[in-house]
Length: 125
Image (tube, rainbow, N blue to C red):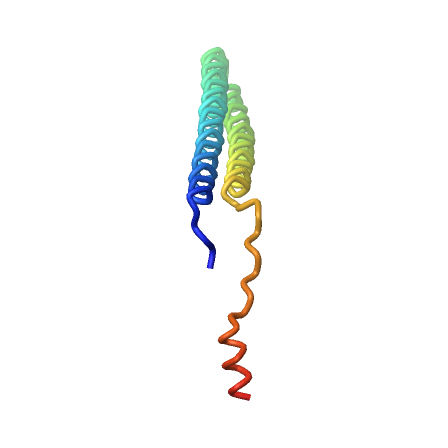
C-alpha cells in the first residue's frame, strides 16, 4: 500500500491544479478559435448571399437569376463542408490535448501478488 505523506498529497494537488489549468487553457483556446472561425465563415457567406441577390436583381432573365442562386448554393455547400472539416479537426485536436493533459506521465508499477495469496495457492495444490 502506498504511504500518504504530506509531500505526496501536496504533489497530487499541484499536479491536479496544473492539469486543470492546462485543460482550461486548451478549451478556452479551442472555443475562441471556434467562434472566430465560424464568425468569419458566416461573414463570407453573408457577403456571398448579398452578391448573389445583386446578381439576381440585375438579371435580365429568369435563367440568369436562377444560375446566380445556384452559384450561391454551390458556394455554401463548399464553404460549409470546409468549415465542418476545420471544426472537426480542431475538436479532435482538443480531445487529443485533453487526453495528453489528463493521462498520467508515470505508469503505476504493477502490483506484486501478496505473499498470503501465494501461500494460499501453494496450500491448495
